[in-house]
Image 1: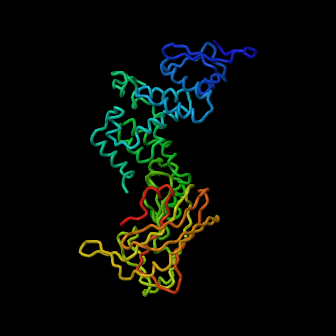
Image 2: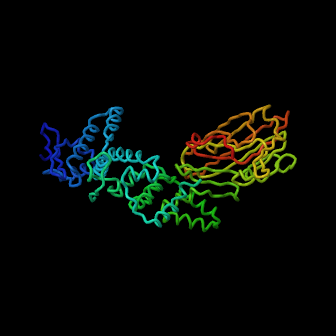
Image 3: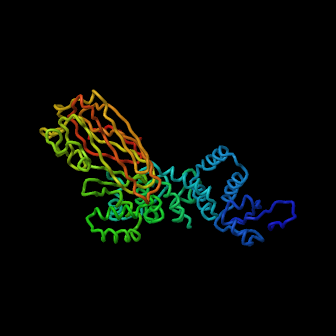
Length: 158
Length: 297
């Protein structure tokens, strides 16, 4: 349903359509945690729903979980507890999907939270450990690797 | 965003987004939350990360706000004339920010080679070392009291050694555009005279006396009215000790901060001696907790 006009007792909503065609009707107050969606509402192009080709239904549901909580709650401790549980995910792929969704939808708080979580997973690990944790393929030639080690050595000398 | 056939930890096997799938803007967001050595480590992971880890946006956020001015001081210290330093400052804008960061982390001598500064790798604070040769030492011209002696445990390879004196006063001053932050100031001294015998480090305590009678006083003050002082008895011969004088806060990095400091023991009822004064050290306050204030070398 398109945004309701004034005089309607129901709060204004907007429909978000995931890449796999799931429809989510969301109050504007919640949806506008996304700056991207906020601009679209302001520009008046949300009639018929907002297609989000970069976000699956599964991820969008999680994003909306975040937005619902943050639009409603005001207690700092409560939000902190929620955030901690929100990123306590076994599945790395979901975490990365959330980063990309937060980036695409421009939701600052969620981007901070998910990127900080990844940063925390990186801290204290050696290069090999990071590769192993995140399944990163080393695509350097041995010469390239030696060159990169040299050009970054200054950060580890004393 | 292509699908990559690597399994996520704990996820469904075969398919799933991995870290390498993130667009560079997202990787940059993660890198912003790491410290410089960690970012350099990330550069070694793969080609994608090498690119993201060199991004100007990431490194600019790590640089102190007045990095262009610091770079000019560094360029002048590298031996350039004043004009060359100005040209270098203009060049600073075109240098990749990672290179600017790396350059500032290297120690730069200034003030006739008697002082040096460098950017702390892990954070945004400046460290500075002011040699004993840049300090005003009462009686330094009298070889009965003070002598400059070679010492390879000093960054400047020279320390001031006191045999004995009634009036002990070691003052100094520095003016510098410190980046915003809180800094701690120390006097780096050593009771006893270290030297090498048959390749081993030995310490002579022949002149050590007088430090247990009255404490030494340390003072510092800044041009904007901050002050601090402390005092202590000097003990523990044979090791270099950084005596903490106090802390100061810099609020505006565009204006130079002028700091004066002193180490004094002028009770003339007794002499004191057997002390090496190496330097005065300024470090960001956050480093104080990390390093031991007492170290052998």
